[in-house]
Image (cartoon, rainbow, N blue to C red; front, side, top):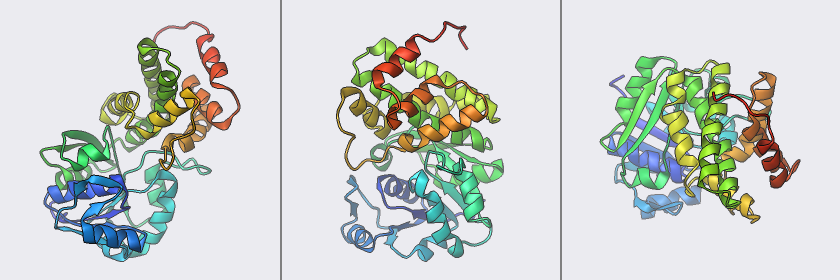
Amino acid sequence: MSSFQSIGVIGAGAWGTALATVAARAGRDVTLYARDAAHAARIATSRINPRLPGATLAPGIAVTNDIALAGGADIILVVTPAQHLRAALLALGPHLSKDTPVVACAKGIERGTHKFMTEIITEAAPHAVPAILSGPSFADDVALGLPTAVTLAAHDEALAAGLVQALGSATFRPYHTSDVRGVEIGGAAKNVLAIAAGIVVGRQLGASAQAALTTRGFAELARFGRALGARSETLVGLSGLGDLILSCSSPQSRNFALGLALGRGEPKPAGKLAEGEFTAPVLGELAAARKVDMPVSQAVAAILSGAITIEAAIEGLLTRPFKAEE
């Protein structure tokens, strides 16, 4: 595990650039891959990514649009949106050595297949070893070296610990676990619940309603996690409750910002992908298949699809039968 010296980062958006900075800060040799040649050349020349303008790339970060160069690293971080992960892996797969750790850094569930991120890695790059990184973090904070803690999961906890050692630093603290599914569920479900929190704030329903929404949302996340075998300590940890609290309270969260716009009756924020918009219907389908009660998440999915209005969704939630605390 101590031989992890080089890290390839697939995806030169804000989060990919921030993680490339993290890896360089940890003393690794880093190759940042951008699919667009002009984007790669611009970053390589200026050492600044226009999608993360507040951070200057360290001299040791190589920037390329040749995926083979990044694919030869000891560890691969795939930093693409969840719905694009499979396509990225199919392009990357031929350039990977056997048993290379591939860490998904997206939070979501694939539409159509209902697959989680590590399942997609296993299918699209079967000779790689899947892992997942998730937790309460914003690209700007991470790139600037502000204190951040996340969770990194692999089925082999010794591997997860080795990946943590390769990426960790004084200001970026990953915690390792073998509860892969718990980490994936926390990241995916919190995106949907953050949209609900944004709607509450946008509708000016008050701080009490926002707190209630966050706690009841976590109860849903925990029920769903338990149904799929996640461990309790993961669900109440950084990648579950911690990420949910951050995402349900900060306009920096793209999912919260989407909900905020919906609640105010404004257009969706332009140019910003909110993963929860894609995850909401999939999460609802998975929950229904397992008979898991997730009324807030299902209300978000119905609002996004146009099946119900926000007013009708709120009324439906407020008129549910009273029940015991969970």
